[in-house]
Image (cartoon, rainbow, N blue to C red; front, side, top):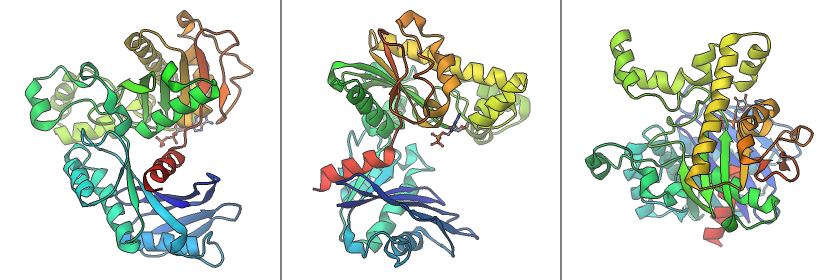
Length: 397
Ligand code: ADP
């Protein structure tokens, strides 16, 4: 069966068509500037050249139709007709406490996703628009929602409750949810597979280090803690997000700089992290280059980033009373060789040491710690689209 995986943003739509038997990506692409002048579809069929189609996309339904046209086109298409799409898997950011796993989408599910809009006002409404557009164009194709938050729903109360008046949890569901769940699930399962063990027998820490970054503690197959919270702002220092700070800083800076809380929120989400600290870039490659050329702020930003990751690894080792494997994934985790070395320098107490030759890899499933290390460190490329396709297949077949 061919499964169309859709990741819909407010003005963008990413897609991959995956064959579930071979797990090959038949085509992938991106619609940009939906609803804005200069809409662009970039379509990449496997083994063929990339095609750029500039045409108006006033809304997401038009974008979905253009994606279907591209997938079935005589020249750059990869299937003959819509009939060759067996199911659609949608990435949905927030499932609140309602969804602890993926579900087949029906009217009730749509309503429940809508009820979570409050918790992810920038993402969930866009995800719903994507689902509705696909339903319009493919009314008879089964669709599945795969939530970023679902894998973390196994966290115990002690991990998800904040030290706030309990009524905020009762009234507004203010608690830790965590994100990147599809990646933490996929990478922890893959790490166990690489080690030839069952995930249910292991304590695994997954470090998803991308532009957005989060860590999770996966104890015998279940997530017991994760660094992102009610929103993706909490936890690690990220590309542009601050991660953990003293909450009193917000009021302090608002008063000093005359900012509103919305403006402060924007600073914390878009102007902080290694970008704000270094003044150079949110892209770790640029920050690393600047640090290597002697930029002290860039070096300090990277130091703080690695130190924060190491502190969370320590915290999650305590949370699980031990750790068997630490997996690095996403853009920085998979590709930043020297970054993994810097983080590993803090982990000697765990009885693990990086093997410089083995660590010399980018984006490949590899054990990167020395033979005989008590705790195994690994590089494990994430693949959220494949994970969504697998979960979709499991629910529709
Ligand atoms: P997101 O999905 O959150 O946008 P990614 O997982 O794609 O993020 O990660 C993007 C980050 O990965 C960027 O900061 C980029 O600099 C970093 N990255 C990608 N390749 C490399 C590399 N070869 N070395 C260091 N960092 C890299």
